[in-house]
Image (cartoon, rainbow, N blue to C red; front, top):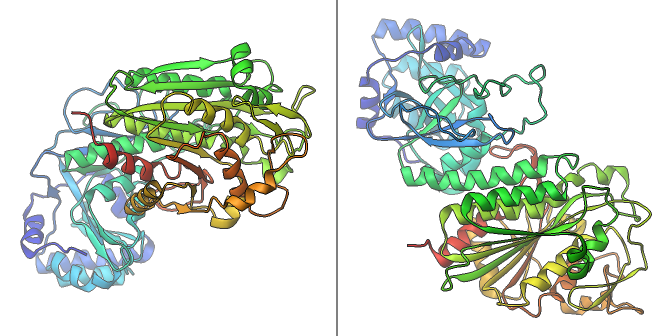
Length: 580
């Protein structure tokens, strides 16, 4: 941990006293044992004439706040100003940069004693911390009382310092106020955690999907009068935990990443009743319009002729939920830019088709469009950062439904490429719709990078679990870059083999290939080998098989998660740079 200097600690203590009602509330709500310790501390503090005050920011800062005036529940990152609120429903202005902020002191377990000695001159304060049971365990918070009315700051435990997203627990742990993380942490488990990573963790942790929460069931609902979830009426109000960030570029970069991740989360979390293929296409059109991209949506007879596998998988869906393909292009006028094409599986709901899934396997199948959602989130990051590349996004969007006209086991389908596919299982539909789009992606210009993202196989999850997306590629440079950048930004991926001998398991007696392997093992590998047959031997192709769903942990609420996109974005940004 990089501890504050004695001079910094002295400056904090000499800052003019500030107290707020929200901090008084926080002070009163300390756990019983902590409250008792606080009373004892206040008595001793008065006796020894030691006072600790809020830290006033001395330079221009930027603030994060959590807002859900739209259904998207975005974590908005906005510059502090005294102006009226932004025209965007997901942004709200806050008070000026000169407003007082409450310091958060991150402390690692192995530096607790040293940190307390530097931060607090008063023995009474140090005794209070110990009597309150603060041990700097990860996620542990403790307000340090200030007189009778407020707190001087908050201690925040980061454990061994190895989890950069530990800061993601703070937006839900702290009372409404403006906060500043005054130091970075260097722990035994994960290296230095700087301001950019800390504020990214804060932003990711502020997410809450509240579209279907009514005012009677939600503790902090969005209101109908245009105010945000906490009733924000003016720029001077503080009705949620707000992080002030001194580094403007770090804030802007974190904002781009958070917006992209939240877009992916929102889409995955939305049930198919409100997010069919047409709805997914509208989201792509909205995103394209915001960034000056062209968007073509291919439907009906054109889809049936040009994308026969996509049409076959989605044709059983009800009226208004017909299959389609989204083709988004950005930066096309810049012929010098390298072409990056990203394909995302958009199965808005997967019943399994006629090879129907058991109920337990169907419960989370709204996430089967997680590939398309993740690709849109990644596209948002790329376009908002103005990376120096040409971007193409292809999204085959379907609902794998059951009806009299559904495709059947043993059917033989002809793909866009001309290859014929025998259907061994209708629940292996994702690879079918990706195949047609991978063919399109390689028909004209060969992409400098060709990625596809899909919640494709349970076999991947058996091999790598919830948290690790599997990547398949023959390109050593891309495999290494994706692994390296994923580890750097704590968004890991793990390479799995494109083991060519397993391709024999896709053999069919009546068609060019079967859509499933003939053995019950190696399913993630055979799925990747199936897709490779439609890439026209593109040497820059990477297939990413991921879960798209996460368990509760700091920075990552349980639900949809566009895994791997932060690492991919970092790789692309370093590979191509930003347009001048």
